[in-house]
Image 1 (cartoon, rainbow, N blue to C red):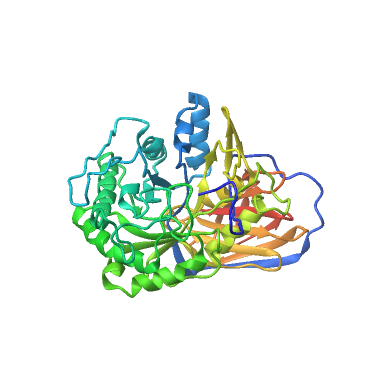
Image 2: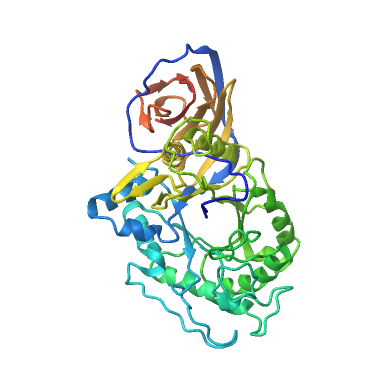
Length: 474
């Protein structure tokens, strides 16, 4: 999660949403016409969604707003009409006094006393309430529940915020005993509680940034220790009957992912247990594919860290919307990630790295919000990335949605506008309507005049330093 300062360089990615005005200001004359080629016969990864988290009290901050501001906040996050349309909600599993097992039972083999109130809006720091709103009003069903750490009494250092590993994994011996099975049962029970509320988690994670230090819920886990615990958690989750996948391992960066994937795939029990691989963008951005034996890979957390509020589009900094647009493009088209999650969608923190700042009852979307939304509102869960070849300063990616619509996203990194012909084949659409949505310094996911698709092609001009999403329908 974001910290006031990060010990690793932060790279950035992209954001969307509420309609704005058409781009204003003088444009450098368009360069010579180019062609972007889209081929629906060449397919890549499935897109499972885009998402955010409101862990560590931010869900409660949204819940505590007045009715008008609360509705605005929810629409900004989840609406596919005038918001970002986020379809994945990553929830932190509390490990302190508000966890489902706040008190030690005395030993790993003792019967736990679980605490759970599905009727309280404050349960799980308000995240259960937020998930209900996301599902009941906006149709969100993809919930990733992630434990940063177990309660402290299960760890070698006795603290959920320390660096100590789980008692019982290799190299972690505790006088209190081996807590691996107890922690596995704890995670399964948490998933059961959510399922009983109609919010069955799509995935459960058991650790967050296992190479990092302390300061909030944390736990160091080497690849060997992760493999060892997966061999315990896997059978426990399978016995529950839940369809919830187990995720490994919310690593600090994609540079760490190969070593964990190698360890997991090299162990039959751990390999059978793992249904999803997850990593963050902090210490290593997602730039190239990682082979996972067919399992999905999520960029499950990334944000700007340590900055004061910066809502700009193209100032050259890591908080800028344009910078995030580049990172989302690279993650999808370069690393073949199946999902892209920012950290806080809405935050009240002073070192505000969120997509949308919240001060009192005022919500202020940053341009990085609109950059990400240019992807998330239009590329829907179940979409397939298809071949798209850009030209010159135009970076291109394309997607075929389950409803048959095709989405082409163009990012112009040049200082002049670019006139282009987008030629599509194999998409099932040879004629129809193309609706562009523009994000740049003057526009925020603003719908532009429609364009006709004829003989599988359309012409457009992409303004300088701009992100344009083209949604093609019959």
